[in-house]
Amino acid sequence: MKKVFITGITGQVGSQLADYVLENTDLEVIGMMRWQESLDNLYHLTDRINRGDRIKLVYADLNDFPSLYNSLEAHRPDFISHLAAQSYPRTSFDIPLETLQTNILGTASLLEAVKGLKEKFLFDPVMHICSSSEVYGRAEVGVKLDETTNFHGASPYSISKIGTDFLGRFYGEAYSIKTFITRMGTHSGPRRSDVFFESTVAKQIALIEAGLQQPVIKVGNLSSTRTFQDARDAVRAYYLLMLESEKGKILPGECFNIAGEEAFQLPEVIEILLGFSTSDDISVSTDSNRLRPIDADYQMFDNTKICSTIDWKPEISVRQMLSDLLDHWRSEISRGRIPLNR
Picture 1: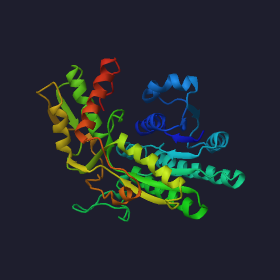
Picture 2: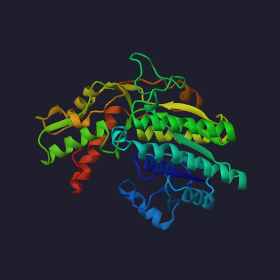
Picture 3: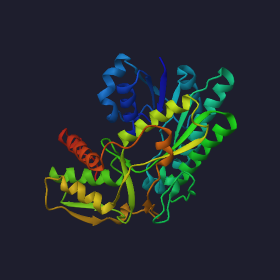
């Protein structure tokens, strides 16, 4: 049975990629996590994990090379989807060195492990390197971003993903590792971490509905315009790209934008979420602690390349995505899992 090795399986996107693979393929899933990570996004799979039903967890860390090498040597996966990262742009201003260490050197360690195993055992997996739309940073208003657009780091996180992006390309071109790089635009839906804009808004609405917060939503910069997509659509694109790479139809080091086709200004996102709320007296207030020193204010994407490479387009509407996200937080709170107000 072929195997897919997912770093960052405990995150929103990693867990949803695992769901997609288990539901739509016959691949075995090997999920990499650090031993102390929360299993919140995997509890629906723990029975299968306990029974060894096509999914297994391994403990390793991007900042510990032997753990990466040993995990890959033991399992020899056919596909690797590298999703693990310090992924919060705002947080990266507070912990820039950890962000750079984990995202750049951690990715280099993973690639070096694959390179070493390839030289020793002819190990030759397809390797998906997850970059980010944040590599484009402060884009020019009115310009659609395609894969040739210049990078402009607008946070330690975006700079770390620029490094990740270049590493994926370099190891593909220099060592013929079957890498491809994805730059996913703003994505959300159930399991989205509460530190991201639309998720913190949905979380606060759910807290207000439950009487656990005053009826005021605290937000940061609302001047941004961007495309949105559901992460469940994005993981389908990841899988299809892995298959194309396996067939040799993607050059080592190629990169792809993956983004939604619906664009919104952030106040419009708040308006949509408030339209789903059972409370009708909620106001919005700017919180200076939620502002970034620099923001990626405008991000509109050109999906031409990926849509001409695989049979893919976003299928879940943004309104459905936001409704599912709000219901996710309502469900968490109803079970007594009260999130921090951050």
